Length: 418
Image 1 (cartoon, rainbow, N blue to C red):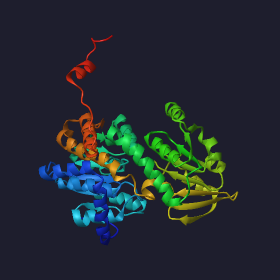
Image 2 (image 1 turned 90 degrees about the vertical axis):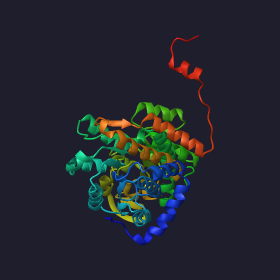
Image 3 (image 1 turned 30 degrees about the horizontal axis):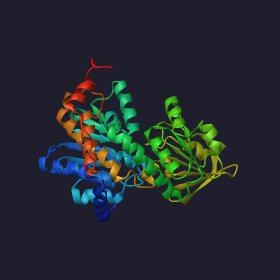
């Protein structure tokens, strides 16, 4: 078995970490048990480009128990938990190509190594694996049945490919499942982003002006948690409907140019590029802290900050101090990469339980029906979404009502009125 991880001696620590996460992933555990009995993915080749965390480790175990041949690589150079990568190799026979802190060249070499299994199914988080497959490894495309995509940024890229008619196999947008983005993006990103900022800086959030660029589901979650910690939350948005929603939710809404002058902490969560620019850096207060919670490190114009700085130094792990010509200092966290995964551990297992249940079921759905699908981006089948919600409720000990036959008939009819 081929692999490239930091140190196999870390495997025992990774094994325990995965066991701890598994305790809080009961839905995936039940799927794992079912997969182990039925082996529905026997000998199916899967290339996965995901954050190599303890939660992802449990997803890989589920797919391995289903009979799949797996190759896993990281979807971000700083998100890999090296102990989990080692545990998957040593204890679960998963080919892992991921090392925390790897450079860009190694990152793409690892993606190519994951593709060397000649996949029938791809799993992506950000679409780097899919884009590599479509640009540099097109010889493998004919063998691919379909793929899944985990995050908003990746779905945007893939929909662009589909619109331009260059997407060569069907993709299921796992990110868009209600049991994913309503919970993972909101509660997971909200909590883990705050966790990453606090681990990196150890600041007190109470009383600070906390500026969030973007009020999608991730931005909503961050705003909720920052507000709960006592911060004065400011939202910056380009979409009028989202901006209006932020106002109605009780937050200040203003342009980023205006917020730059008063913000203490800045977090980007837009999925777009060059959101915080040179102009914003020049307007910021001395000591401003800047972080990113979007998938790629392009939301903060780091090259512009580098040019503005007369010197820089590492203050703490994941904290880089930039001193501008004026003497003002700006602190960039985690190299502008995903703060929740670079400086913390990403989303809690309890919420990833649903996200990765979606992944597991969608992989099985693609294997069974992918050959009949068009080369576009599909939503998660509604049945899968609702089944996962029911499974999660059951694990929480929550029972809900069911519609009667009369109620179902009423909701599907039109004749009965006042």
